[in-house]
Image 1 (spheres, rainbow, N blue to C red):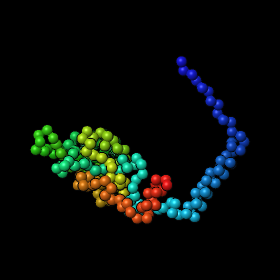
Image 2 (image 1 turned 135 degrees about the vertical axis):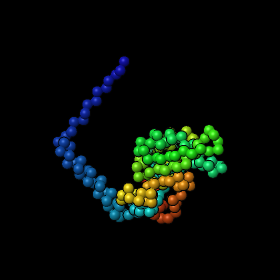
Image 3 (image 1 turned 45 degrees about the horizontal axis):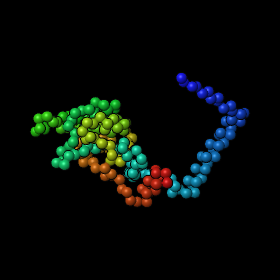
Image 4 (image 1 turned 135 degrees about the horizontal axis):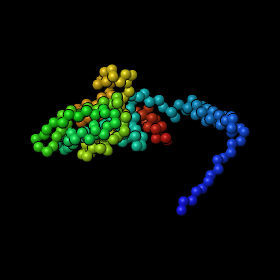
Length: 189
Ligand code: SF4
Ligand code: SF4
C-alpha cells in the first residue's frame, strides 16, 4: 500500500510576492563578495589560463586530457578495436588499425583526437576493454579563438605521438605563489 503525504506549498506574504526582500538579500550577498575580494584580492587569484595551468580539483582530474597507456616494452596497450571511436558522441576519435607480428592483435597505425570537438564525457575511457585510453593527465585542452584555424597547432588536437608520450601532470607546475593560491581557491580553503 502506497502512502501519500500531501505537502502544502508555503504561502508567500506580500513582501515575498513582490520579491523586494529577496532582491535586497541577493544584493547584500553580492556586495559582501565584492568588498571582501577588493580588500583581500589574494582570496580570489586570477589564473592566466591557458598559459598558467593548475591542478584540477576533485573528480575533474578524471576528465582531463587523454593519454594512451604503454606496455612495459613500450608498445601501446591499445589494440585498435575502435570501441572508443564508435561510442564517442562527438565523432572526434580517428583510428586506423595496423597489423602486428602477433596474428590476433592489431595496433593503432593512426590515433588522433580532435579536442576542439571533444566534450570530455569520458565515454571512450569507459568503453575501452584494454584500459588503454585514460583521461588522467590533469590538463584541460587549451582555448582558441577559432576551432578550425590551425587547430593542429593550437592545442586542440592530440596526435598519436602526443597521446603516447603525454604523462600525467606533464604541463603543471606545482610550485609558484599564483599556483598555490589558485589551488587553495579551487579546493575551497
Ligand atoms: S571524452 Fe567523450 S567526446 Fe571526448 S573523445 Fe572521449 S568519448 Fe569522445
Ligand atoms: S577502445 Fe581502447 S583498445 Fe579499443 S581502440 Fe580505443 S583505446 Fe584502443
